[in-house]
Length: 86
Figure 1 (cartoon, rainbow, N blue to C red):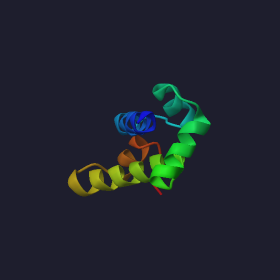
Figure 2: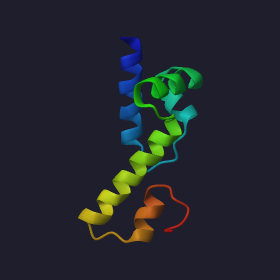
Figure 3: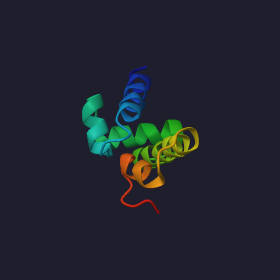
């Protein structure tokens, strides 16, 4: 049950901070667990590393913003922590 609580907290933290600089260390600190424990939990439950999950969520959110708003590609790319609009 504790693992489920950590996973929910980690995913929630990631969702709230998608437009900020994120990495496994930051997420682990926010969830009060070790980086290795968090990585194992993500691999077991989602078959992704924490970084892969963050990257996929950012890409999904950026695509949604581009489709549903008038935001430019450049603006959206920088908002979701991409270094260039390409």
